Amino acid sequence: MNMKNTICLAGALALTFATGALASTASQREYKRGYADCAAGRWDQEQHGASYKKGCDAAEAKKSAGGTEAPATAEQKPAPFMDKSVPAKDKQACVRAVKKTTHNPRVVVVGAVSSEANNEVTLGVGPEKAPWRCLVKRGKVADVMSQTNEGAL
Image (cartoon, rainbow, N blue to C red; front, top):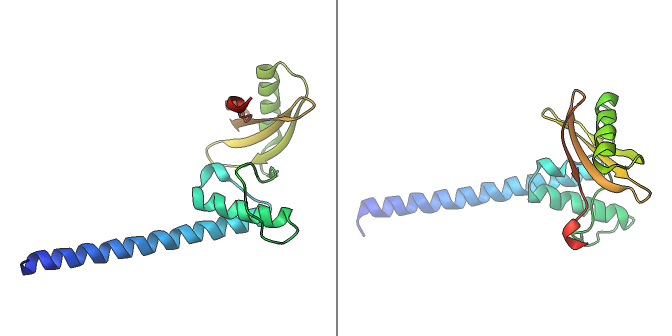
């Protein structure tokens, strides 16, 4: 192996190790941020990666186990967060849209999260409060979607 190839190989190895270390550190930061957000009652799992979600799941598991760490399951989901900065007109627009889509007059807002793009409003439909999600901004609904895993029914 000549000197040029040796230098290139050494540089590539150094870059590989540095990138891996940074990725690990970023992943750990996301986990800690997810843990802190969910422990404080804030969460936004639609906007973050797997590390954030794992941290959030760990915080929720700890909270539900009375302070002791419990293994998180795929079924666990943090309780909906009610962001006071989501305007009432956005919530009402979502209630109307979900009532129209489901043909069910029993719709309640159970959570809301503010975002620059679209606010996300979580709603419960019917006596069992089946979960629905609504994306809305300035009273205009962008999307309404059932959160029920219909494939498992």
